[in-house]
Length: 344
Image 1 (cartoon, rainbow, N blue to C red):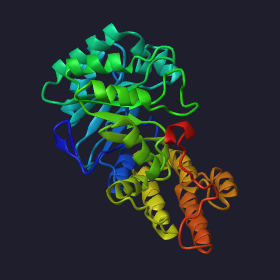
Image 2: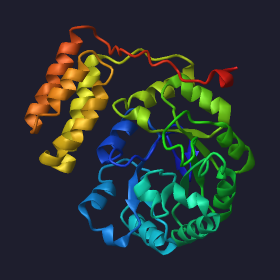
Image 3: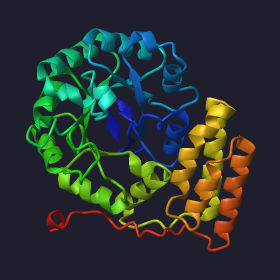
């Protein structure tokens, strides 16, 4: 896929997720089939550029390009500074967050709260695009502020006029948070009315759902977030299904054991042992959810305080799981969540 001047492996994108899409996770998802992985959002507040958390979020050492860094804020001057700061440190694409629904972001009129002020949206986008003329700028939004005020099309038109190179749209409003089902009609409408690439996001959790969303919206690509937590191989599953129409068999337990352990080792190295163990707990929880015996395992694992014990517990869990069968078997069926009224 050609995207913002780069040739990508495919049209599958890893959604930026705070506390999740660090360097380790981005690299893993790319190895497992993602075409592009966007960083965690980095605050535009210049006072935070030197913090350890911000440095980690903007750490792209050894990461294969293109490197896409997402910035978040509400002040055009600060966002300009943030864009330049990250480009100087290796960002090849700047992504602007106008989609985050979190209260701590929206309470300072950043993230999806910006969609309430289309004039400010235009000022921000124009300023950032002009500030980094050699670097493509992309945008992430929602369908609107609430269901009575869906203005994704208006914002998308502003973005295109300002020189934004692509736009990702989550199929919920800010007020929806992550509740209910994502809707795709708004994304489809935007796709027919603007000329820049549109990336569809929201509830894409299987190869079949990926095909459905592409067909429903006509989008140029798909952005996958929560469904990749503990299941980064979803990208190769979708890639294969879109190319062949065939579903890959469930992965071998031994392979997922190796993927999980390698991910843990990367987290320990990236964050240091103490913080790495804490960060690893949620990833281990995601890797094991839905598998036999996982609830008791997670409860015991969360009490472990060092990386050796944590790694040994993971080894023991997957070793016992392998005795029940070669391939992963989830208790939940993972049926495709396609609304009946849309599937007709």
